[in-house]
Amino acid sequence: MRDDIEEVRQRKAKTLELGGADKIARLRERGHYTARERVDLLLDEGSFLEMGQLNHSDVPGMEEATPADGKVGGIGTIDARHVTVAADDNTVLAGSGGRVGGKKSRFLNNLAIEKGYPIINLGEGGGARIPDIMGSDGLSAMTIGQESGQRMRRVPMVATIMGECFGSPSWHAALSDFVVQQKGSCMAVAGPRVLELSTGEKVDLEELGGWQLHAEVTGQADRAAETEEECFQLVRDFLSFLPSNAEELPPMGKPDIRAEERQSRLLDLLPEEPSRTYDMTKIIRTFVDHEAFFPIKPNFDPSVVCGLARLDGKSVGIIASQPKFLAGAMGPDGCDKCAGFIALCDSFHIPLIFLHDTPGFMAGKAAEQKRMPGKIINFIEALSLATVPKVSVIIRKTYGMATGNMAGPGMGADFQLAWPTADISFVAPEVAANIVYARKIAEADDPKAAREAAIEEMRLGSRPWAAAGKGYLDDVIEPQDTRRILIQCLHIARGSENKSAWSKRHLANWPTTM
Image (cartoon, rainbow, N blue to C red; front, side):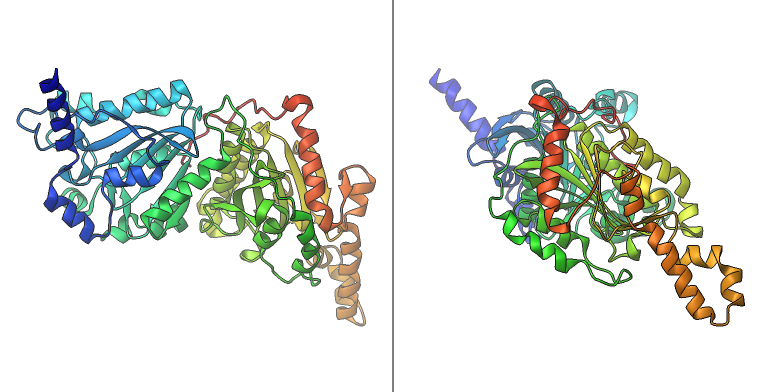
């Protein structure tokens, strides 16, 4: 027995050497941690239970060269809640994936879904391993698997991109609810070398799949991070807002007992002049708990803000116009961002708050080339299918179709609120005046004065009083009361004994990447 125990110890000790000291040294030169260090940094101290530590490649002769078959995986905890984690080991054949490592990943994913634990993939690898995947039997054994598309958001799925990630790390990211990409890394289908050999195209890593591409252009990275430590903290922060699985409600945070003291700030954050811009996130941070707001895709169509926060300790999702960018005029990418965020919140029972200050949707050739009408309607479909509690607050302007997309009157929100600064209409008063009174203005003795009078007439009609008087708005509230009233509205909307807090999850199979 003692000899057998000693053999176990020796075999496991060997796997801790990873791909060898020289490979680890090269990793250090690039400023990276090893796969095992990454797992330890992510999880609660001492919580990791490794699975498949003694795995290796099933290709004859490759056993010694492939400790754990290039993938460190197991179960641990984050904030005392169980998660599964799989980390690509870049010191083993460049982090490429073999058949045995693939089995390990599928085992962990199936375990997570069955037991109700979030799935985390820490990516830095070169995709499927050659020769493992070659030939009819190799490829047949290493397809991504039907189950990869059947999670239906039963548990949260998160991915990090650190270093060069081609093939499977990119698939994991595209399947995930939340993706963090470290600056200096690359996420793509295939690497530059394969691309040049197969198509003749020459491109560097940053152009091919750098963080700016995915954070600003494709939207496939939800957040960008400077360091690996920041990646792990973002993962922990994101999961803190979500339940471990769809059979639970989101965890409670610590309520902000001093929040009321800062609500008067809201009176100073909104400019008196309607045409002046401001930062909507300052308004959000003022009324949420501890001034803490966790943005999702902040650099992907920044004309609209999506993110997670807490009110009275409870998780909420916030979708808000951002007047700092294009006056809050959302484009096709913003519609995709909002639809995906609604699907996330609805799948995990997170109520939604909408804050309006938008002149409508972006119009023009560029928007139409990206299927603007279809994107607007995708957004509407996601909103209409969402069954979590919803509250709409009109801060300033809300015009045209965008009013409906922001859960305005008639779109199923539990409560419709407005600040007294609300400006609600089909188009801006200036535009309406020029259309309706064009001849009258042109023929007036003083066209400038006539135009100003026409604009003021139109502006009076767009004030919130008519909508409130006819029951389209439930209330017009003072800005400093926003937090208190939102908390009350959401408490009511959750229903007796939280019966209405549970979503019907109609959006559980909404695509994770649009």
